Length: 145
Image (tube, rainbow, N blue to C red):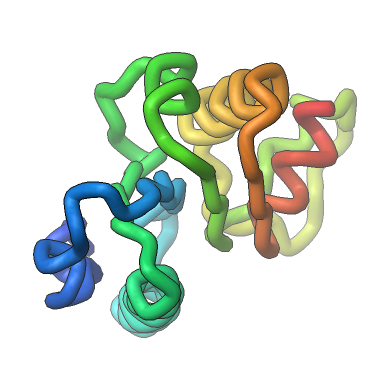
C-alpha cells in the first residue's frame, strides 16, 4: 500500500503557537500526487514540512492547502491569506498550454489540482498579494499568466 500524506503529517509543531496577529500564508501543495511511491511520499512530506517550518521561523502562520483534494474556493482562499506560496509536486498537464503530443517522462499529472492552483494564482495576482512559486509552482505561474 502506498503511503498517503495528511496536512497533520507536515504541519510544524510551532504553527499553533503563532501570535493571532501573525501574517497568514497559504501554502499550496499537492500532498498526494498520482503515481506517488513511498519514496516520493517521504520526500514530499519532508520538503513540505521544512518549507512550513521556515515560514513559522520567520513569523508566519501557515495554512496548508492540499490542491490534490481541497474543497476550498480558490478566490476566497486568495482573498483571506496575507500571502500565498506554491510548492513543488507533479508535472503540470501539458494540454493546459496547448501541447497535444504525448510527453515523455511525465509524472504525477493531476488536472484538477492544476486548474484549482491556476485559479488561486490568478486571484492572488488580481488582488496584488505576495505570491511565491517554487518548482511546480513556477510552472503553474507561467501557465496561469
